[in-house]
Image 1: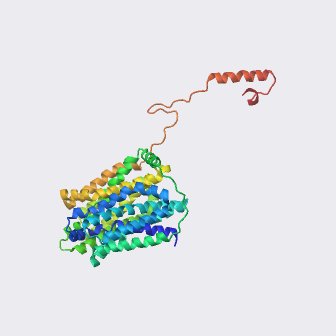
Image 2: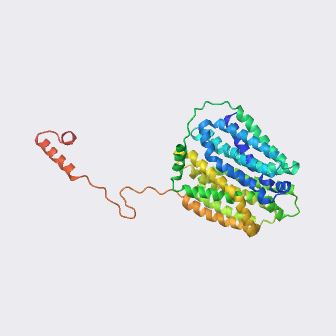
Image 3: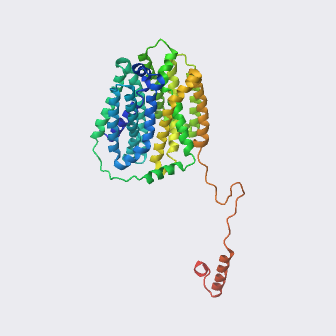
Length: 434
């Protein structure tokens, strides 16, 4: 089996496990007799663990080898999902979910680094672009399968489905022949030096802050989709609500797949600045449409369009992150992923607080306004190209300064040499006078 296909299955398994609990909020609340915000902590703690593991997994992959680290992460993720499937209490499920975030968070970044080792030049960019389909497809199918399987067999069967997918990734990852890898010492100073190189760019705080807010805005609502659909139709049962939430999250993922298919056209026609502006207008309109949705079926198209808008902005920010420090690009992408998933960890409790204060239409209206504020910062502080270096000889805010002339003494020493050579009958020129 080709190496790319094996790595794609591993990334797919991590993304599949990422969204399986989002549609299950209401069934789990009923099964463990817990309030909905408490069950939504399963999403928060997974995203937080995912974010915290990013700066650690990268150096481990450098030290022990990418493929070996991928095997460890696959085995650890499968074991945590197995514990989640048989968890006797909500506390055990919460701990297992936190550990799943550590192993799941280590898979996708190390897979991308392994692709960088395996491919060179233009083939590397094509391979990473195709890997995007595996990661988005995993999130899409994870939510969809989770909601459907829960309606048929219960929430534990949905977790068993994710365990099976990850088990297949374990088998394939262990089947890859180990490649010789020379151990590379990873010192604390080296890691800190890479992080300093990334944060030295003045755009770094703005970029990572925007990524954090982006993750909270677009993903904070996912654990509460079932509750929202229940408010739109109070006669629907819990299993049907979980199935509808899975379909809705899958619709959001379809927007990301659409972007992956048309990204060359968008980049060529719009460019980064106009792409972010267009995505902001789309996101504002879709959040406003969600605020006035009369039923759950009316949310599918806006959510798909919202997924397209998110990916347009996210890809632009991701591209800027690769330009922060070319010598420490791995550290830059680790910080980028940490900021994104920290935002996803903070998103659900913030969404719950806004929903309690403003109601369902108010929370989506607030998101529409927040997207506009985020776009202003992105366009002015992140996407805008850095200022060009000041021309030599021009003082800031002043007239152009003349280049200093050569010292007269140097020219004065050369002229007598020429005259003396001419009097002596020697040819004037560089050989005689310089």
